[in-house]
Amino acid sequence: MHNAHPWLLGLDLGPRSHGALIFAAWLREAADARVFGVHVLEAGTGRFAGGADEAADAVRTAVDQRCERLGLPPLEQVEVLMVPRAEEGLAGRCEHAAGLILGRAAATGATTLVRLGRVARRVLRQLPGPVIVVPPELAEVGPGPILLATDLGPASTGAAQFARSFAAAVGRPLELLHVGERQDGDMLGALDPRWHVEREGQRAEALAAASAWTVEVALGDRPRRVVFGERVAEIAAVAEECQAALIIVGSRQLGVGARIFTTSTASALAGVAGCAVAVVPPA
Image 1 (cartoon, rainbow, N blue to C red):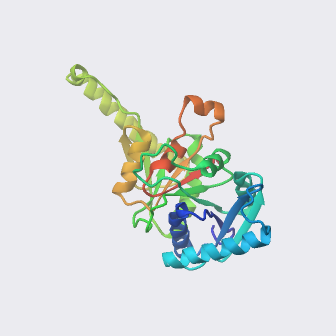
Image 2 (image 1 turned 30 degrees about the vertical axis):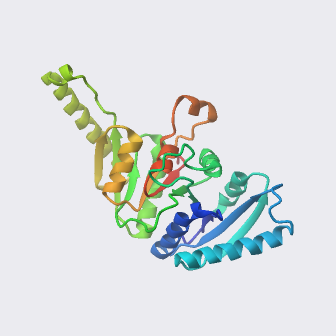
Image 3 (image 1 turned 180 degrees about the horizontal axis):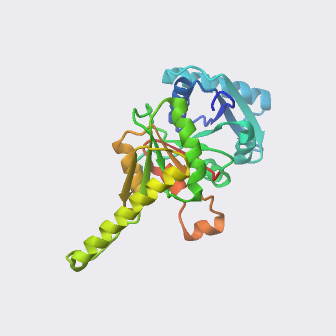
């Protein structure tokens, strides 16, 4: 999968690219993948008066120095784009790529409101292909499985296909996670035996639905977990518990209007998880 098309690594010359560089180096080693660096300069910034050639030389030197400081092999190729909008330049380059790797603005556990960064947020809205968002403080990829978090709906079909091939390429087991809706009850309700019967019935239905979905998307008899609660928090907690190498989640690709009324689970998860998160468009 990864040898046919290279991965693109969106490079920021600040610290938010540290984790992304480490994840990219792991991907190169684990899957024998090609990873090409891309740094985008938005037109009109005036950062390099000498033009594209000066910009390209300066960026390549900075990236090589960063890799050396992190103890990583240099990237095979680093391209510098000068375009009006960074997200458009990255999306255009993704057409013939396996996917895009981006660094995240906020460290895991930070309380800042801006977690993804402007370019990452806009790329996830367009989602030109699989996009992997990596926390900036990532020092090594976890030793655990590839974790496919699914809502069992059509938005997860593309994620399932990607997860199967990615797990095989990096030689990691693939585990499925479904977060069911928590059944809340007040103290008096919890004392009623019927409430417990209803809750157990709900859990059994969720387990059966998860089993049926794995057959539907041809994932076979993979290990699977069904938990209940707030979706983003539960996925992040399970990933931390099993030391997941990567969380993979599908996207409903909500428009701007829809985002006013509902939160994108994929974007929210990419902003808080302690490991890399791959957001995959629908099949």
